[in-house]
Length: 130
Image 1 (spheres, one colour):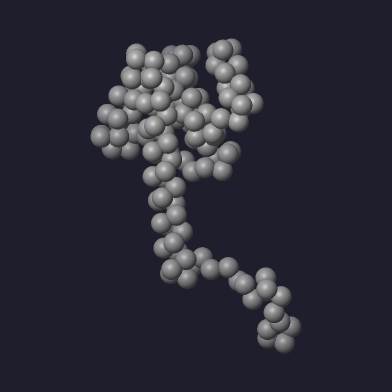
Image 2 (tube, one colour):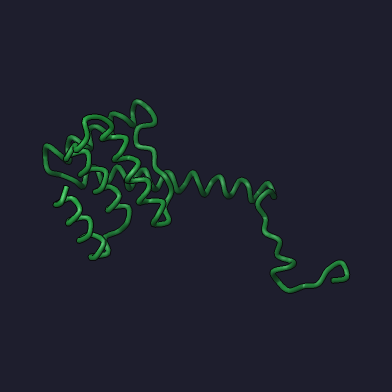
């Protein structure tokens, strides 16, 4: 665990992209397997916490059966073949998909007029006798 934290701090100091750090946190914690149970859940929680703290959206890595297969395959490739880029790619693609879903929801609510800011006050105009 000490090496895990040393590498994490080093990545932070080197300004590695937050999505790649989040992928590292998940991938490495699963590899270390410090708990009897819940290592995967804890790793996904840590990854998503890091993403949120750095302005990114939550990602879902195991939503469908196909997603689960891709998830376990990427972890296996990272751990047995020493190719962390396989898992990094999975997390990056999941973050992009999550951001696209978020943006499409925002566009939908904007188009429906349910999320429009009140620009009349922000622009400094006086209406209704103010």
